[in-house]
Length: 499
Image (cartoon, rainbow, N blue to C red; front, side, top):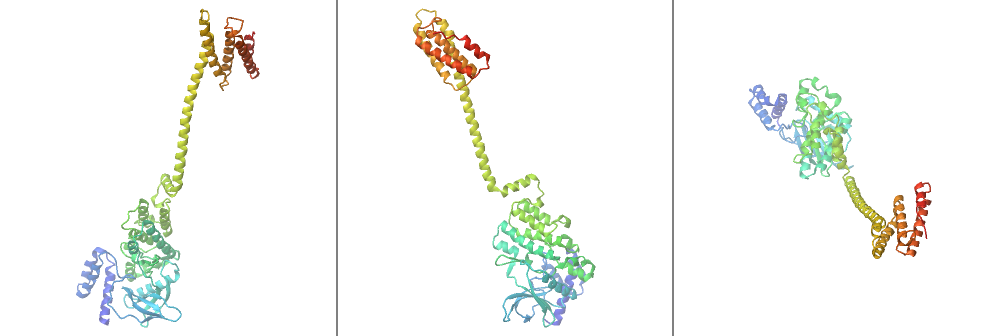
């Protein structure tokens, strides 16, 4: 690249940097007014602003579209031989290289900055990236191996080469389901959480800065615009040049609203970007209500309304996967009960079967009890009828028929039928005292009718004798179990047992 063209491109980048300080709707008008006397520069700046229709900027570290003209590849970066260019951005370029010494051979990414592109402030930021990456040792963050300067003085860092694709492309290409995408997102949270634990804010979490390699492992890259949290508060106090650099340090659409107003970044800014990243990773899927609540909480316009930390965001996603209550949902006891039931579906199903079985068994028991009770009432009715029939035959009907001449045979039939009823009553398992007394009286009456000479009888003395004996035994037995009852004693004396 000639010195004249290099100078022109440097002026273009400086002009573009100033243009991005302006509100997005005023940038073109501002550029036309500012550079009206330099048509070539104005045309180049307007062309770059026009290409920024989606708000995605190529000046951030890791941008793949060329802004500077092609230039020869450096041959080496320390012990590493440069193979090809991976991408170029406003900060410089990223190259693919490999270590070709005898001890080991592996491929790396070499990030190089051109000292004259945006001046000392950007070089300082690049050196800051070295310091930041040196602090971070996490499987989800691209590792720093080495650093130094090229022969022409350009500073560089040697980083882990991530042969991957943006996370949004990965989930789409592999047609991942909801749970798989959420678990992948939790890997991102783990990496960013590690950075926050070391007081580092990434400040530009986007799909292109979150790569997934071939084995499905997440790698967060491009900490070139990251800052220690202790440095963030100073952003607005370092002059115009620092302010312009800060304006380049985020990607519209993923940056928190306060960033576009010039506010410094903090961990809550990263939480917002993570919420937007999650939303982009889930594009094309139907989002459950709890998941929508998580995204909404993470991307609240007011920082204080967001998740307080990356860990609380990640924990809510974990709760969603495990069917636990999601804090962002803010549900009550009924909501938590539904979550519990979903978590224990097998147990609930088994318990439901058990409960249904218990209810069914109870219903059958009640039905059987009702049937038994009905049968008992029916038996009671029949028993009462038999009891009343026997008494009617022996006392009322016999007295009515006995004076009529020629009724001997019908009376014998009557007494035989009455005894059948009495024998049935005597075999009953019932222990009612009044029933036993009624039975004894009936047997005694039947004995008298059959052949007891104390009154009119049918002349069957042997039958009468057996009945009187049975009556006596039953009455003695009743008295032995009821010795304190005066009524039993009266029955004993009232019944005569003549032979």
